[in-house]
Length: 349
Image (tube, one colour):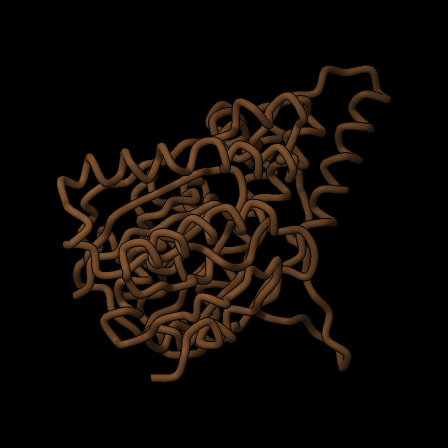
């Protein structure tokens, strides 16, 4: 397999890693969360400038920690889609420059494909086919993983992503940013059955509901109404109970759809990726449901690989490079790009 230096700058983490197949030589992550907390969310211009300031230092640190020389690196990769355009350009430009200077193949990697590969880093026996549940601040998707670069999206959110809903509800409850870890911690002290909240179903034209698609905007509104009613009645808002009820509703909704999808397509393994993969409620619900329905296994990446990181990008790039896939240096960035079009990032063999 190929050894790849990978750069990830799609949002608010500047990350660099060196990976060979599923072995991580080094992984450096510089988070910008403290900077963006004062704004209550990610500011694209601020994120891009921070990437620009940190990326060279992160590359040097990753090389130093890997104890490898440039002659031992087979390729250079960077996330090219989807994400914040300015932020993506920083990582892509750095990767292209390194590829030209050191005369290495260059690869542009799809961010969501990276999240799929995050589970590979800790699971030596995981191979396609399997179902991937991707849940993050910007994406909530059920993806049939058929092989490297071969994906079919079976379900997705029609509005807010799960992680986005966590952030918005945390802001509503005045808990701070990012919302996922704060709500998860608070939910441990609350009653998940305290408030009945809607799971959000997508209606089909002929009646019934779409079995795999999700909707979380209505859930966010329902939490707002609960809080408004409690405040109107003059009572104190039980934050832990609201957080627990909200988290349980999202976990239950995602679990139902993932289990139904896996069973309908005859897949016995579900691999979860993205920042929300770290959520304790989702882990508990999905593992219990999988055991109940006799699925072979549900896999979660280590916590350090749930949020954005370059090791997952390197893992995906290593697989692509070993199959002879490389990208042209003319490749640009895309704020949006369907995962089903991932092979468009690579030149024909």
